[in-house]
Amino acid sequence: MHRIKALPFDWQFDPATTALLVIDMQRDFIEPGGFGASLGNDVSLLQSAVPVVAELLQIARQAGLTVIHTRECHRPDLADCPSTKRLRGDPLLHIGDDGPMGRILVCGEPGADIIPQVAPRPGEMVIDKPGKGAFYATALTEMLRWHNIRSLLLAGVTTEVCVQTTMREANDRGYECLLVEDATASYFEEFKLATLAMIRAQGGIVGWTAPLAAVREAFGE
Ligand code: C5J
Image (cartoon, rainbow, N blue to C red; front, side):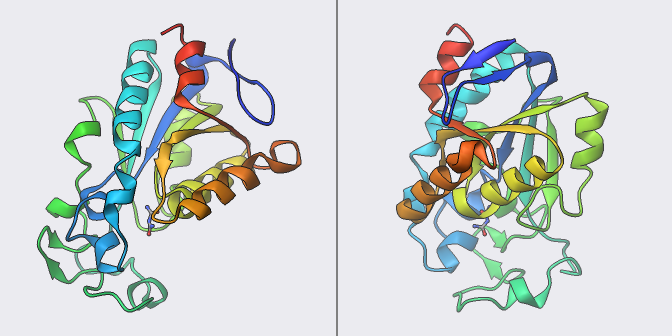
């Protein structure tokens, strides 16, 4: 077993049954002209997580962990995008509209791509998901079972939306989860801090959090 100095207490995990799950590091959220920007957000606020996720990926790959990436995106006919999502807010562009990086949040469009700095390597799994949680309407459960995964290291954007939703879904399904604090970011710093606090409150009611430095140390890097 490996041990990470985490909050609310040390996290123990077996690398053979642990996966790194990287949530939605897509151009649509991180670059100007995509979904995040269309909702009026300052997308530059997500940049801080990019080099941290890149190093986390490097550590995980070197340690032989299973690596899974997710992309939030919809079918071109938008059959999987309910009006509760498409019509929410007052965006400049709605999901499915033509934008500078292709159709907003549609699978296969340039905006739905994962940014090059943290791009998947051949052999790594990539899951397209229509919801906030990565378990909803995807084969993630089956993929984790197939690879005998029991624990998840989480990273990605945005902290309080798709990352937190996925972590809660995973916790309900019996996975031990640790969110890497500096490998996640939000358009709202206060929401990120609140999410980290509520995850580890009450004895780790959703799971654990730790900075990349603690992960690095646990892997002897
Ligand atoms: C959002 C996400 N923020 N990946 N999606 O709508 O967190």
